Length: 282
Ligand code: PAF
Image (cartoon, rainbow, N blue to C red; front, top):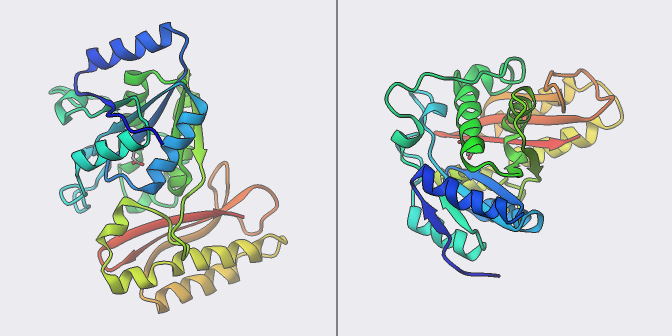
């Protein structure tokens, strides 16, 4: 595994100059957008990036516009030194770490809304979240101008929203999803897992277990409603507060009553104060 400190940029002109040099040399550039608090899941994205391109850039920006007023923006874990050390291990060429004022200077007035895909699942529980994500990701893509950008499938609705925005806006970048990395007990890796108290951490893998049961039971085209109700009851009995648990068309994210094409089972649930999301292919 390589270990050399990535070039860190906080100035957009300097970042653009660097990436333009790579592109002029014919080097393929891959971006991994993050909010920092990096973990093995992000490192898997970086490893994938290194397979795809000659140059890899990770962005680290805790984007205020995708957090609601009662969400965890102020307590979101931030440790830039640790993140840069991990990016060095992962062999990243550059880290783009803009300040809030660089991303949203005074007078900033644009928002990208992706209708339809943003409206279900997490949408009603996190008003404005996907507009915040679509806007910041569009900016990151314009700033870095990568050939490919990688996103974890754990945030499957986010991935679909970004794919739609990129297609609709004719952005010249390929968006690829990377399968979720899990702990040995099935819990999806997430920066927010570090909020979990030990007793919550012990219960958290139940989320994946319920998704796996529903995915297995839904494959034969039987109606999904009964399985979803049973899954929700099992999660609530284990101490979760379920926001949604649904089987959806993998492209449109519209709920389906039975599976007859590519589908995904998706959930969001609170354990104490920590909101966990996860999903599986059906
Ligand atoms: O998934 C994330 O970490 C964030 O939503 C993203 C894509 C970096 C945008 O802020």
